[in-house]
Amino acid sequence: MMAACATACGGGESTSGPGGTSPTGGHRVAVAITNLQGNGTVVQLNGANDQLPLPTNSFLYFTNVSKGTQFTISVKAQPSSPWQTCAIGGGTGTMGDLDIDGPTMTCTTNVYAVRGTVGGLTAGGLTLANGTGNPISIASGASAFEFAGIASGTNYAVKVVSQPTGQTCALNNGSGMVTNADVANLTLTCGAPGFTVGGAASGYGSSGLALSLNGGASLSIAAGSSAFTFANVLQTGNQYSIVITAMPPGSASDFRQSCALARARGKIGTNNVTDAFVACKANSGLAGYDGVYAIDAGSGRRDFLMLLSDGTYSFADRTDDPTCPQNGNGAEYGVYSRGSSGTFSVRSALTDRNGACGIWDSQAATPTGLTGTMSRTNDVLTLTTSDGTYVLNAVASVATSLVGAFTRADGVDGSFVVFEPDGTYLYQEAQEAPSLSVTAGWERGCYTVTGASFTTSLASSCKPSGLPALDLNNAGGFSAYNGAAIPFTIDSPTSITIDGRKYRRLVPAG
Image (tube, rainbow, N blue to C red; front, side, top):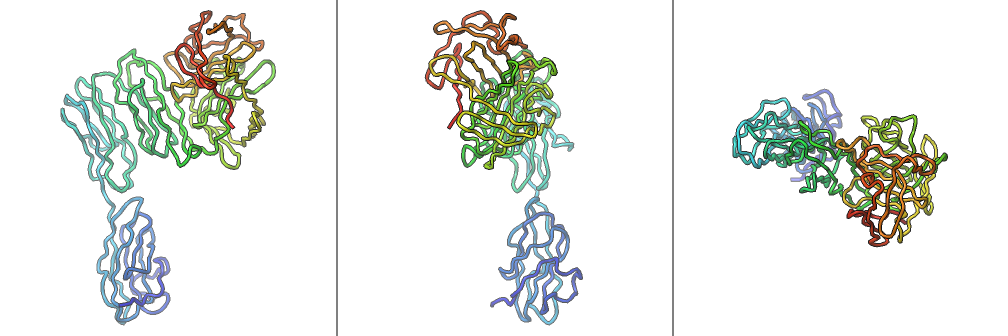
């Protein structure tokens, strides 16, 4: 039988509740709604006349239902965020002489489990908790665990409350939000007593990010995760080094997120490492802007900015800045983005803790970065911000000599070196290295080339552009070779090997 519902009115058209007069005349069917919390619910009468109920307890009306019409009320789309299941009561009948006020729609929030796998557990005493809830005990030899009955839309934060006797367990993917299915990607890996390495992620909103610790297997970071911990258990005195092995992909190389590391290298002490940091930022329109550029600031000062096509950047200045403490003097590392309109923004990864000495002045605990416009003409890059206009010239690159700008090819960390034609160089290792010092390899000095080797000089008599040589950490960069020959080979017009380590020659693209 054809339904006579020519008009569908939303639940907000009448506030009189059951027993009122149909707002448009004719007869109506009123549906009382209970406990609706989610969004996007669609209710139908006789398979049509879609209705979107109010997101609170109220009434939903189907109007202009002709006398004698048989009707069936059904839920076409269940609510989401949180995900619920709504059931119709008294939803079938035949329209008579009076409005019908009896049908109901009662919604119940779905519950799911948060579960994971356990590996290597050979002892008792392990307990886990979800937030502040009651801990659960995991028996020796267990291969799985589960927190059940967690309502959709609820945040979960599973943590290790107590370690098993004689072992250390590391948990990954332990935080997030329950949506419309069981969460089953938590992993708990147990091993010999020791300490774990982990930290926080910020701004990461898509899948695909992966990290590696000490060259080990890649650890995939779940979308939306705010924390990570490697399963590896290290002993006091062990060195640790985290690198990014995969960036979050996108529909094209220029439309993805970029992530940068901070506090990602160091030495294990007597506690777990929890302060490594990954800062991510969405980017677009980067093609044609990657390269190493120099800013001539006068008085012998020459600053360097490296932009990589993966959306990371490094900045270093070659001058002792008397207004800043000796802990970086402008060394900076982070992620940048550029929009189709030419706008750009940056976010520092808190690399050198220098406060405000970098060009971006973005070292706050929650850095806001710098915004402005970015344009390029041939090999000249112009950045215009509220702080002023910066004109940057591409660093010269000569394929048959050491002169040029190079980025390390062994990890996504923004480290780079610039060898200039005047016999000076600058090196920056972008990740902070507590085992060395806060500058993580930032240094400048002089170099001379003899055949297939070069020799660095950090002596006080070496004055690049009239300024003293600087090596604050005594271990990073080339300082360990001060006065000694360092072998190098030009592998191709785009790559070079220095003392066995690969570097990629970087010149502006386009």
